[in-house]
Length: 397
Image (cartoon, rainbow, N blue to C red):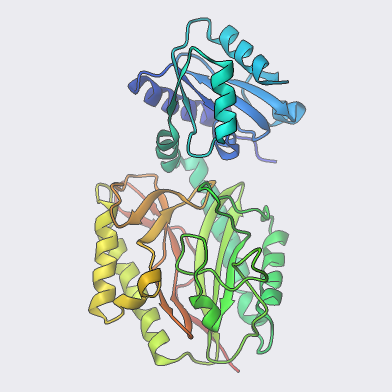
C-alpha cells in the first residue's frame, strides 16, 4: 500500500499555510475525505487542524489505528466528540485563535452549527476555493500516478473491441469492462466533490442512449438501469452502425484519468463520422493554443467557434437547450477539480495543472460522437497523458 511521503505532505501543508497567512487566518480545520487524504495521507474519519505556524494535528474518530498506520504525521490523537476537539485544538495552538478556515462547500449545516457551538469565540471563513486551488497544481509525485493510470487504461482499451457483439446489453458490456479495470487494481469508487453528484466507473452507452443527459453537469449520461440511478449503462442492446461510447475513469492510487472513446460495430452514419473528425480538430486546435498564461475561457470560446463554423454548433456539448458550457475539467483525487475550461472561467493555465479535454457532439436519436483525453500543463506547453490512440475503432459486423 502506497503511503504519501512526509516530504510531499509537508509541501502541501506549507502551501496551505502560506495561503492562510495571506488571508490573515489562524489556521484551517479540514474534514472532507479527499482533503484529509491530500493533507494528512489518510482519510480516516476525523479532523485535521492546520495552524499557520506549526505541523498539523490529526484527530481521528474512526479508525484511529489505521490513521496511525497510513499517515506520516507525528501528531495523531483519538477523538471522541466535538468538545474534545475544541480542547485538543486549544491546547495544541498554545495561543488565542480568532479565525479558522472551513470547507464550507461540503460541510453540512448541522456540522457547521455544532462547530459554532463548540468554538463560540471563533470566526469561521470559507476556504473551499483556496483548497481547490492548492490541489489544482500537481506535483511530480502526483503526476506519476496519472501516468500509471494511463498505462492500465491503454491495456484495457485494447481489449474492448473483442467485447463488442451485436445484441449484447450495455450493462453486460459495462460489467466486462469494469471487471478488467478491477483486475488491474481500480479502486471501484469514483469521487466527485460537487453537491449531489455521484458516478460509478463512468458511463457506457450505445446509440440513442449516448444522447441522453442526466442530473450530472455533463453532456452525456446514459439511460441507466433505474430511475433511482438514472445514468450509465442500461439494458439497450448493441446494434450495428451505432456509436458505442465508453467514458470511463482509470484510477491509480486515487488519481483519476478520465477518458472517452467511441467504438462501432460496422460503419457509422456520415454525420457522426464528420462530428468525430471535427472533435479531433477542435482538440488539436485547443491544445495548440493552450500554454501557461492562457485563459481557460478563451479555449472554450475557440472550441465553440470551431464547432459552429462546421455547422455543428447546435450539437456541441449537448443538443441546444441541454448544452453544457464547458469543454474540459480538472482532474486529481476528484473528477471535478479545477481548472474548468468553461464559459466565464477565470482560471489561467499554470504548469502542474491536469485536465480532461472532451469535445463531444450529441445527436438526438443517434448518439454521441467525440473523444476525451487527459493533458498536463508544462512550462513549455502541453503533454498528453492519455496513451490510447485517438482513432475511432470500428469492428466488423
